[in-house]
Structure formats: C-alpha cells, structure tokens
Image 1 (cartoon, rainbow, N blue to C red):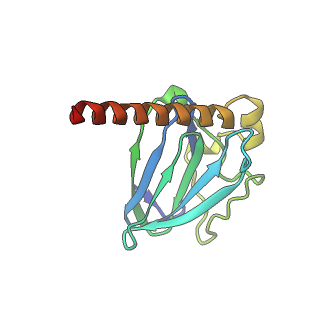
Image 2 (cartoon, rainbow, N blue to C red):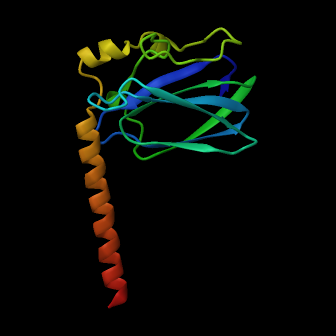
Length: 163
C-alpha cells in the first residue's frame, strides 16, 4: 500500500535469474514506470509509464532485467505483484527514481516521498560504473534459455499424451 506522492523504485534484480513481474493496482491508482536499465540495450536509459487503477483493471508485465517504479496517484493505492522468482535481497538493486539523466516525469501534485533505500540508490551512471546493471546480452540469453526449456517441456508433454 502506498499513499499519494510515495515513489517506489527503480528496482531490478540480477540476471540470471532476474525477476519478471506482472503488476496490477487493485485499489486506487498509480503511475507505473518501466525503465530499461540493461547495459547495451537499444533502449538503455529510456522509460515508459502507464496508469494502472481499479477501474480499467490494466496490468503491466516486466521482463527480467527491466527496472520498475511507481507512484500513487490516489490518496491510497494497493499494488499487487506476481513475480517469477522469490524476493532475494542480495540480488535486488535500485537506481534513484529522481535521477535527472533518466528524467521520469513524475506527477508534480505532491512532494515526492522516498524510502531511505530509494533515496540512497545510485544514479544510473553510478550503477553502471559499479557493475550493478544487468547486461542486455545476458538478459536475451537468459530469456532464450527459458523459452527453450518451456518449448521442450511442451513437446515432451505432447509426445507423452499422444502415445
């Protein structure tokens, strides 16, 4: 649960294994932000935002290696995540959500409120220098392995049931 003006993120996990997320807002409204923090990516440093709320019932899927942040647009908002892997504090990292180099257009109707962890997060440039960011090539290779495993499991299941 978050209140108006609270900004959470930009969070991401080491790849592999990474952490894909399916995000929805079940109460209130948020501005959900996806940031490409993958070094070597054609979209590196770019972001995209979408409104999630309890009226339209939209959701966002974030693949492994992407950064995630949001802010509550309503007085209170409840956000639910479905994650591909369990939370592992040692593999979780962040980039400062107010980093001017990223330039997220956060709503200006409330003073931004950050957790101590998010306020102390490095800029994108610092995180890159410190080797914290996932590499685009590693993310692509990891997804290809996942797709290969899923396809193999499907074929094995189909073969077993058809005999």
